[in-house]
Image 1 (cartoon, helix red, strand yellow):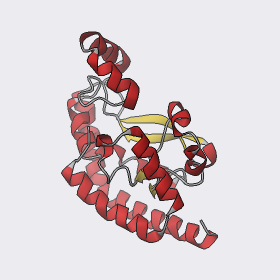
Image 2: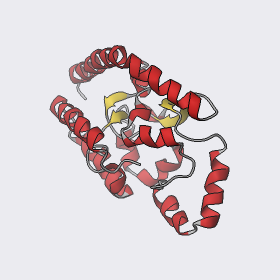
Image 3: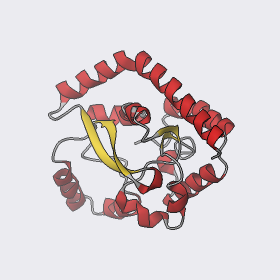
Length: 206
């Protein structure tokens, strides 16, 4: 980005994020109560992600899984070995046994990602950008990882408004490459508008 364009993107992030946090405070409280009364464990979940310049940070999310979820996943694969291939390929399952009933609802409408607004205020993420990835995905990105590191990852992005989990992994990487190479304020505005539709339709969300 040119410096002026980067400052404009940052200003928009801060204005919209602060407004969003004020408006969504009641929703945060209701979600926190629902999580706390339906399953044991903390309300929030911190997960290490790669950000700008390859630096790692803790991304905030509402907890959507049971504690000791890995043991539940292993038990699931023993009973449903056919799901193991899908997991190894995409790291996703349509019916993940680790996900709570409330968590499934939060994921369907992307509400579990609302706490990442705090990551935007901390300068670790942007409202719009590439999908934040974990260390295990760096090799899968290949050369595209260098482009990924040029910007802050986003709460939403081209992947989220283009089918999400209905897309293949190479398509996800291609969406991130396209975003970085073709970024503009207008592209961000387009993605934000499409995000509203994607959230309500819950297309590809699980």
